Amino acid sequence: MTVLEQLSKLSSAEEFFQFLDVPYEPAVLHIARLHILRRMGDYLRNSSTEMDEETLRANLRMHLAQAYQDFVSSTPLDERVFKVLKDAVRPKTQRLIALLVPGERHNS
Image (tube, rainbow, N blue to C red; front, side, top):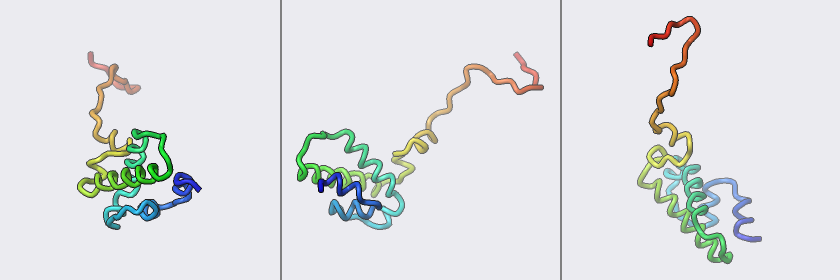
């Protein structure tokens, strides 16, 4: 079974860390587990896809450790990995046209 096939069978963040032999603090993982795995995926999308199993496993380990370190010294709110958190700080845009509510007068 390939490394990717083995990863696809894992169901928790702890299993990813154990499988890839990356040390972690449970308190950090408890707070940011989904954010860490998402960041790992972001790092993987930006890396080379052509590699043998040994190199792939080392690459996965490196990206998981890097993603974990991002959240050791920061918070999910500061890192804003997910769109909902990114949108929360996006500046509000002004409407191009004013919307009228039925029954209200428009002052122009």
